Image (cartoon, rainbow, N blue to C red; front, side, top):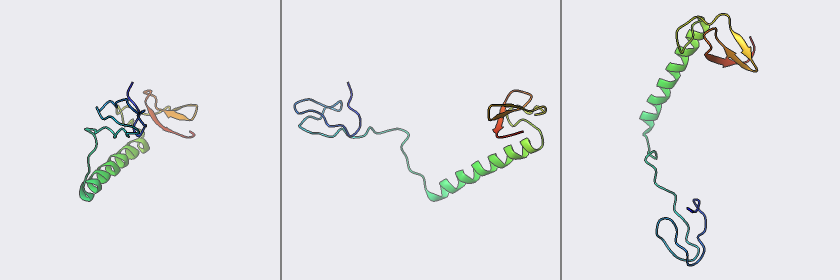
Length: 95
C-alpha cells in the first residue's frame, strides 16, 4: 500500500520511495504536468480562451450550435440544462 502525500510512515517501515525512518514524511510525487508559465504566456492563453468563449457566445446568439454548426431551434430544457435541436448542450438556465 502506498501512503498518501504527507502521511507519516510508521517507525521501521519504508515508504514507497525507499526512505526509511520513524515519522518520515512521504514527499509529493513529481508530476509531468507540473510546470510554470510566464505572465506573458498566461496572458496569451487567457486571451485565447476569451476569444474562443466570445466566438461560442456569438454562435449561440445567432442560433447556431457551437459544436456541430446545426440550427439550435427548437431548444429544449431538461432540468436546468438547455439543449439545441441537434442534442448538444448549449448552456443552462431558462428558455
